[in-house]
Image (cartoon, rainbow, N blue to C red; front, side, top):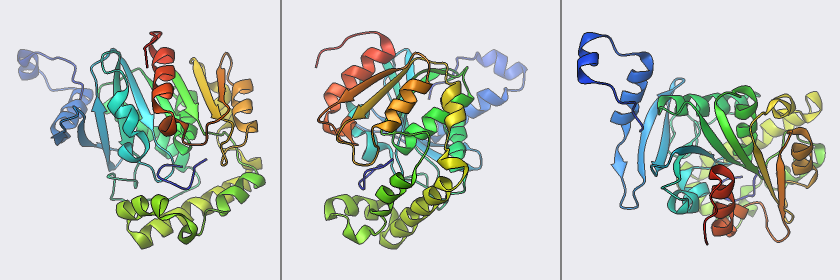
Length: 304
């Protein structure tokens, strides 16, 4: 699910004359709002902004002009830069158009204060889908880590016509009582190392970080006691797009039965296991992970 560390505008061209003769479509208005919301372009070439989606302003970053759009989906309490810095900076910008976002209540998508209703994974999935629609991406691929992987499974299994390809790692479609024991071991954030705790406190504040993390732990505990811990088995079974599952055999938060279940459930999926990798394999082995992802998403093999 999540390691106790950070994580656990493209506009369709429209002629001026047409815009003067007819009222703009809702989709065009949404894209214009997305364009106007872009507030910063860093020297790295990464642009950023906020878009109004489902009653909240979602922060996003994007980079590249490639023909294949892909959305990066972060883990619990995660954000664009804490969870996906190596991907935003190093994924091939000629092959991919990379979008990353902070889910509602996370990172720079505050306010609102993050809450965890029992359907929060599904809520995040709809937010992510509607964000991509607002940015003008009707079809796109997904890369989901940890909680973001769960959200990606739901999105891909619910909006099957939208998603071209799917990559997930550190994700699961159900939780067991053994999983809950792992999560509960992280509840007391005072036991976290300073290196892991300080970035979270910088984003959320010391007291609010603890409150939000406890909310996450409480929600997963409730979900584990309902429907045999089912998070998204139905959606997982309904996934139709090519899917790559990556698992680190040293992942202390997601035991091997979870990627095996995903592989056996998603028809035609591919499972890759990295013997020396942990939960945050995309950060620890960023170059290798990026190369594998680029090849899966585009069919083009790139050199390290």
